[in-house]
Image (cartoon, rainbow, N blue to C red; front, side, top):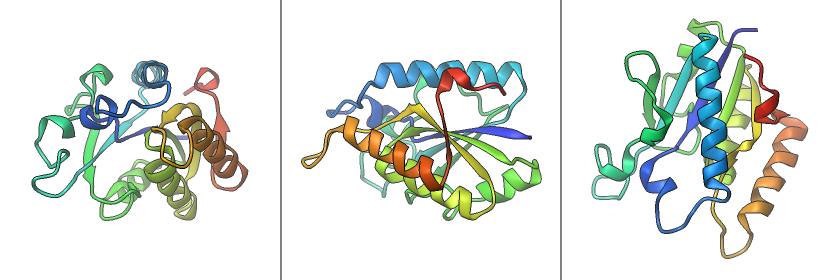
Length: 174
């Protein structure tokens, strides 16, 4: 099945902000491994940045808006795009690009589990793609109500039950 890797919101300001993502370095290492594997197997990589309004810390072009340099993404070979809503398909041409490339399996990684990961997995399924959620390659921060670990576990269980196939990053074979 034609596959693609979708990296969501792995941005300087979200990853290195005041609140640290749960198991951030481990998640980053897992995503870096997936990027390397995708490159070797010529699997397309799509990376999206959440873009805030002018004046926000993640406004287009700001230092915090940039994708993490550690991902070693390359605008010449990877598809880098912006979104302003949690769902990476909303207001973007992601679905059209995936369909044009005949992508069926969409490996989803990044931040934040309860917002952009959740809404993008649900939307991908509704649009006819087969989202594969990498259980150990998405993260978020603690909230006033729930710990990040609980949020991640809940989303793995919920999304894995009805919207995405749950897979560990070590099991990926592009």
